[in-house]
Length: 624
Image 1 (cartoon, helix red, strand yellow):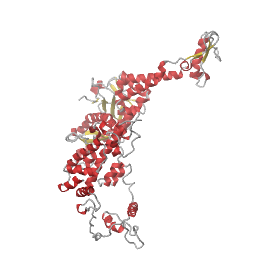
Image 2 (tube, helix red, strand yellow):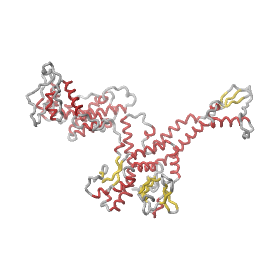
Image 3 (cartoon, one colour):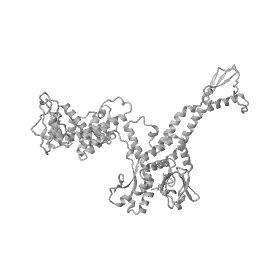
Image 4 (spheres, helix red, strand yellow):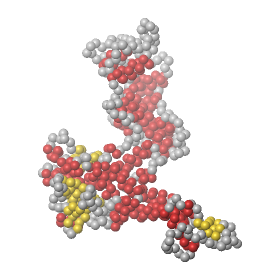
């Protein structure tokens, strides 16, 4: 591995290289071109949102290191956090440190981390200095303070000086940056901007000369101050005045009126001479081309500079994901590796911490990862009993505690639902109390007559069961998911009866989970078909997301790409059911190949044929 950081000591002053010409040019373009400044600030702002912590890598090296917390029993675990807490004053100062390091590593490709004792307060002071702020002269290292521009000498025997750089691929000891290969493109963009500015300020390039009849005579300069040196030729003097006046006075009429001249009477009709060139028409394409090349060469997604007008919320999320994984995290890894090898572990060894080599400084970039709308999936999982209400509120963007309804609001909602469905409160009160939900005693549902009789739509009040006594847990009512409670209606068809029996045998909860996984997979496929199909399909498809495959031919696309990651939720819920996972995959592929809608009876038949259900229901599901 090529080292990307080194501790500068008194005997290693040569480790402080002088500022190179390309680094000076890079800083010059940073000051002149807002495009480059925006790119550098985008990276610096992104890194400032990340959190640094001391952790211990996992045994297999996969995943992020486990953070060291206050709950750890070992005294060495707590001491391992001390150097990071002292760096720039702890978490409060880390964002500014990461921000400046990101800018330096993006523009000149190197930076200096300086920790020294303040001469007045005696406290440790940390700085992030560029090559212009940190330099060596006459074997004396100095740094410019950011607040006073004062040059302060540094004693390398007591101070901590760490040089961090992006190593060049060919010469690892040299600093490198994305801007180094873009100097020509940046110069082209700067020249085009200067050319446009010259056109705007030039009198000749904008208005030209209007030739009139009679001998060519230029008007004499007017209002000339005494002693103003002008050429004796009146035509030249008039040209100079016509070009200078609009520059000094933008409100002058000569800025919009062409210069007049005369020609012999026998010459052709009056004509206008335009001084613009063919290059003027190519300014905009040339600038856009230069901007695209710069956007492609910087260490960030090109869409950040070029815009995401064609992106929806799914592709925008993918751009953010790629930005974090391919651009921000590698830069954070370089910084964390430098801080670990050259700062944390030497400090822990000096403190006498055992096994100092096992600790690392790492990052947490979770705040940068943007997720798409997960509220529908959270609502479906909550309906299936697989998610808490707090999780649903967080997925929808609400707080878990402040937005939680009160007990009175929950009671009002339940009473409203009971009233709409014509259910007596007395019939469900024992079960609600078992769940910890209390209804007021005065809650009475609407009845079919004034005597309080049962409504025709209400269930039987008793069903052979008695309300539970005090301290007893009531028996839950029979549900369609219980095998013993299945009754075939007299008017049910054989297919419906078999479907009901299959659902009854395995219970509605697993079937609902499988159906949710199927709809989720079809929904993901539909969105991909809509995105990959281009503008020809946008605005013309009006149906549910899981039915888009019935409108757009999926055969025009690779099935593996369409189904990539489509079963993530199903695998999460039914991770111990490989039979169901294989059967669902075959079922979904059949629907895509035939462009058919989801059919529960067909799904149950596929699951039964694959042997995912009990053998007792084989014949019934075959009938379905």
